[in-house]
Image (cartoon, rainbow, N blue to C red; front, side, top):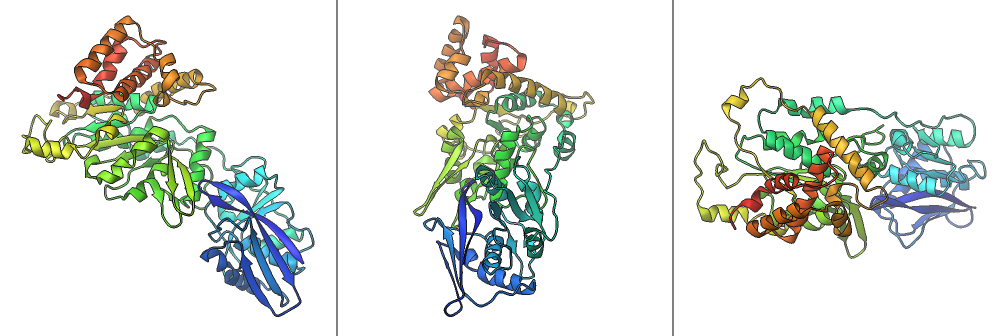
Length: 511
């Protein structure tokens, strides 16, 4: 008897259908064969499944068993085929009624006692199941909230193989899992990350944070040790707008594939904030490996990638950021496969101005030679620097500001300004590829960043005097557009351009 069970395999951040076919032949010597490019963890599922069946008191008569994972020309890995294989064997042996589980999708790892364990990549599988018109999706209980995010698909969270058999045999009832209600974690996030109201001084740096968050721009902090660069960056999450449902689904898929969702967790509501250590390799940054996994770039998708002590990172690790920052995606090409992971991030970086760190500090003398400073700065290439929109100097905070009781601009106020600016951009870019001003390019840039004669004269002189590249010119226009949006201005004026140029500190240095 041949039984077919529907399941799926994850490829990148998406999934494709896999039909697990079981041929249960009573003739011939007992044997078990699995075909269909099954990798190690899948082949080992035979021992796990038979132990779970035996310990669950399911007795199968001896047979010659052939299992095929179709399509047979694509590799399948992981432990998520345990439950589909067990269901297929039980249906072929007649333990389950004929037609049980037809039109349903299954995934899950079995323990030797028959309990179901969570697996990675359930959200892409749930999206696939809905697209295939599945009547139900059976998953481990710890994955149920994750899969239930997909509307229109009944999801059943199972604790054990015995529970699955009882439900499919109609000897017990189960209720579909309901998705967790959305939570407003803005206040909780502020308690964890801190509030900008607690930041003493650095008003111009907070203004740069507001501009970066409003337009989705990359930001570089430049200043001596102890000036508050890291503190400012860590509070970025408190002013960013909340994820839309589509964005939250994109982020959750990546974390699901990477196996980073906690048991029982549903959709991710907060924008990611990733801060890898400077010893990270280029593969850890962009992803890859023998079993491909998303890197820090993709894990920061729709959120913030914070690189503290930027120039301590290996140069090769920094250079691999260039293309993803421009395209919003990273393609990993290997001999056997090519994967594309999303990587639309806001890069926030912090660096010292020189090896000793005190070049711009008015209180402590710098001990570095000009050659040492030049060699230190050369670790950051011009093409990568051009891809960072805002370069902001963060000087040491004077004592009078440290002891001041004057309240600064709070995260709530800044977030309100940012959300208002983002709403103007959402209306402006309705139906277009761009989502925020940082995405503007080509004709969209010309259309939405028109200048009057005074603006052209000012920017032309800035390009001439500061020796700006074409990419720097584009960045200034995007920043000016965001500044105008923060003020609610329909057009870019000369003051907006002046503030945008002032946000490019490294362009103002002598060539």
